[in-house]
Amino acid sequence: MDLRRTPAPRALLSLAAAALALGALVGCSEVEDAVRDTAAEAGCQVAQEAVDGVTGQARQAVEDLGADPAGAEQELRNLRDAVATAADGLSGEVGTHLDEAEAALDDLVAQAEAAADGTQVDETAVETAQTELDTAVDELTRVC
Image (cartoon, rainbow, N blue to C red; front, top):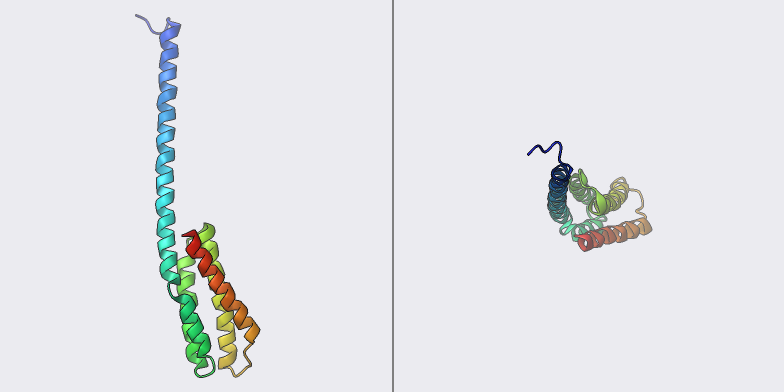
């Protein structure tokens, strides 16, 4: 039988090729979804480890501003740097919330620097930064 001259087998071959291509695409989509889910889970794990206890540690450092402003500044810098390191390479909601936490910690570092330099601490700025930090960590926990 010569398949080049018979239209029905040629159509069947085309249909089979299309079905095979479609099956490959569906399989790729499932693999992409699995990879995306795994990456999101890994990102959440990194983020959660970075912010685990950060709000409590930041509050303690703020409480220490009067007694040991240089020590409080260093502690807040360490917290900010840990969050910043975790944020590198993470995107989406997880990355956004880590960036928000980093910004709040940066504001707290600025207030600690002021205290270490003998300048009056802006209590409103400290309270705002702590609230923003709490919100960012809560939202991150919700997302993950």
